[in-house]
Image (cartoon, rainbow, N blue to C red; front, side, top):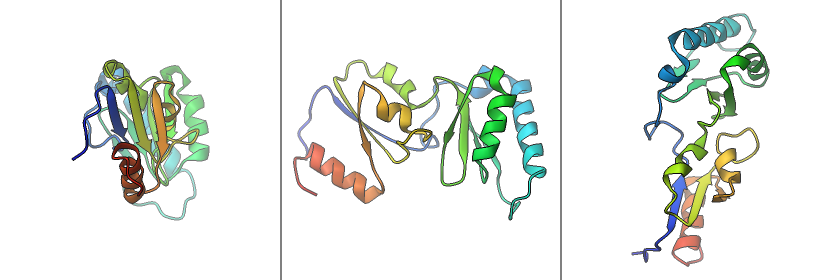
Amino acid sequence: MAVRRPGLIALFDVDGTLTAPRKSLKTHLGDENIRDFINFTLHYLADIDIPIKRGTFIEFRSGMINVHNIRAKMVEVLREKFAHLNLTFSIGGQISFDAFPQGWDKTYCLKYLDEFEEIHFFGDKTYKGGNDHEIYESARTVGHTVTSPDDTMDQCTTLFLNKQA
């Protein structure tokens, strides 16, 4: 068993589906703005030529909207069309992106961790535009890029158990 180190916490990217958001996107933006955003997105998808049009394209979560199967060009259009909503768009998966209010990125949790002197964050999308970037780059965290569950385990073993992986 590892020795407890007071003042140290490790945070892991759990993709927004395993932890409850602290705030509701519906309450923050309102039904009308959410409906406008989703309607615009669906019309945009209907009017473009992509090889496969089936499956889930929009996933509404409590704290964000995840749009699947299209990214770069659409994000530019959405940023312009919905600038008044102050949304952040970040790469959420291999072919999707997340849309959420500015400040609702993963650094949001840091305000609840004031008692910790050392905060390590482990995530895979730590590059600019990735959904782990802001917390990875935060002055409050020690950021670690991981590529797989095995890589995460190896890095944690080396860092926290003082063993070579």
